[in-house]
Length: 121
Image (cartoon, one colour):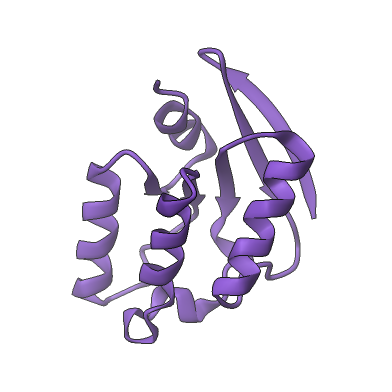
């Protein structure tokens, strides 16, 4: 795992890259959140979709909702960047749509979209 930081609009954002799956359950999400915060001090994170276990995108597992709630509770904003066209679930599409309307958790296509969303005060 590699963590870099960028600064946009006086907001520091941690950008994570990895060839491994980093989030498999709620605890691994909390561990990642704590590591990023400790190493960078950032409370805004960009993750590639590929670092999340596919169970995250199956809403029946409740993993996405539980992880989203933890990030909100700890005041961490996150954008997950990737291609979501392969998912047919209307519930997942609704979940992503509602998340994107908020201010804390986003599902976006590009890093630049993520930077734009997360750099807003």
